[in-house]
Length: 138
Image 1 (cartoon, helix red, strand yellow):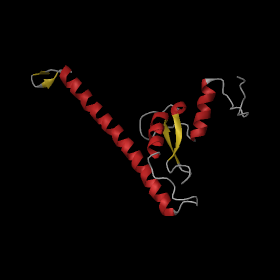
Image 2 (cartoon, rainbow, N blue to C red):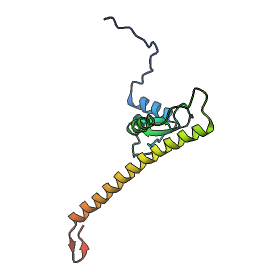
Image 3 (spheres, rainbow, N blue to C red):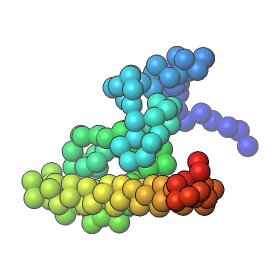
């Protein structure tokens, strides 16, 4: 079977890691970007997520690829557009609130995970430090 190329536009490549990193920082609009949900800060692993969905607004937030996949998947469960007309202000606000709820749900899950991890870390330290005369020996 003969292979035909459907997309004649070639994406510009950046041959070295530093150039790719600078390009990612440019795309993200920040020299020190971070995911707003998790601790990821490598610009190569960060993307811009439309927090209103593209059809309802142009605002974006910086999230890592993993958090972006979760947020984008959650948007698939949102109600569809009401009709083919431009969305009304009320419809836009409704979709914005659904997207905000998705974001907060994901952030709450991450905060719970971090909190439990810190408590376990404290318990591990406490277990290693046997008290001597009522004072921790660590």
